[in-house]
Image (cartoon, rainbow, N blue to C red; front, side, top):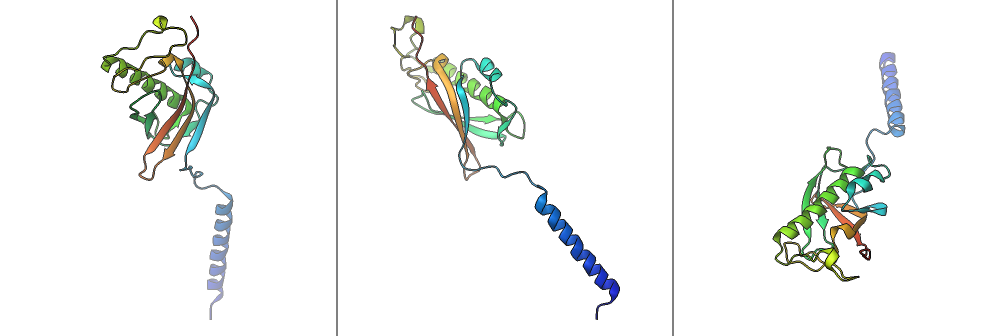
Length: 182
């Protein structure tokens, strides 16, 4: 037979378990799960890739963490014949803020255009020398850029995915603007 001190001890333990269960069911003890499916980040109005400072100043919630991973692969496909896959690292371990993501994308696009100019035998025709409505000529550098100069590109959205191997891949939605008539 169970003595009274043991019975009160068991009731106290059961009561403690009940209180702990009640508290844990109502209090968030872990951060919300991060979606591992493709996640889209829109930039209404677009981000000018040749002028990141002005575009960053217009961002809504620039310090919001939009990609909660420190390392990622940036995939630049357009307007390139040979896509670029560039490893980028967030300046903070919590991941990429909207501001830092835009800054990294603009810097990498600029680096791609510089690398193209440095490796191309066929140089781009300067915009002032092109006929009205004529687009950037295809160059034969490492990336084979065609159709648009950097000043004509606008980033309208980003899509990131965490692949099963744990790699975060960032794909860009970039649109080209028509060059204003001279």
